[in-house]
Length: 251
Image 1 (cartoon, rainbow, N blue to C red):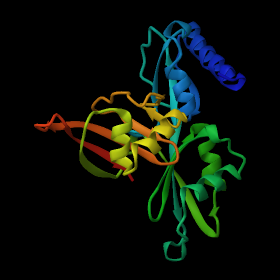
Image 2: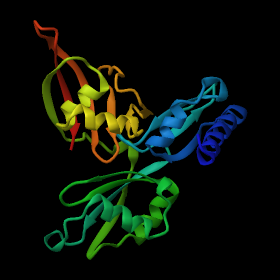
Image 3: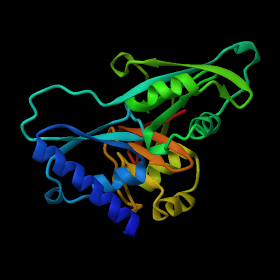
Image 4: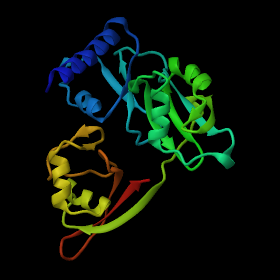
């Protein structure tokens, strides 16, 4: 672990200590996959409290951490909002990408850790934003590339989203990580094994570096630069001992 990761680990421990000592819920910024992996692999005895994570919807990639005191006696909400960005004139809007939206937000001086996932469809985007940045963005985010836009704030508890996915079925020799990656991304096990060894594959936010890691039903697998999928489990076993399985690859 390098110096930067050690400092981040210390920051997590400090947040956990604050939650324990003050008896309140303490929140982190949005964490990326590497940072979530550091959190999930921290020895429990080094943390002073339990924790939960949430990014706005099921299978979100960037998530906030809530460090929870032992005697939690009140309900809490994660301190981020939903920012919906639409073109002022749909007819003349450009086809905007994830990179376009992110670039426009960062160009306003917003740190990446204050922004969660960005969900893009054909005519608009939804961005999860730390509460203390949401008003600023709603007022100042007026253009993405050459397209004039309007941004409005929605309450997180009223937001509903189900990611679209492609269901993929196939027959595999085992439910090893490398085998299911090959099925989901229609690629060779040897190429995908390199991604695992290169520390680019995460299962439920935890970095996995073993090709033979066995997946469990409901696991969310994220591959940097390629996407993510959910392993839905074994449908049946063939007479030759192979497994008929199904995965949902998110669009």
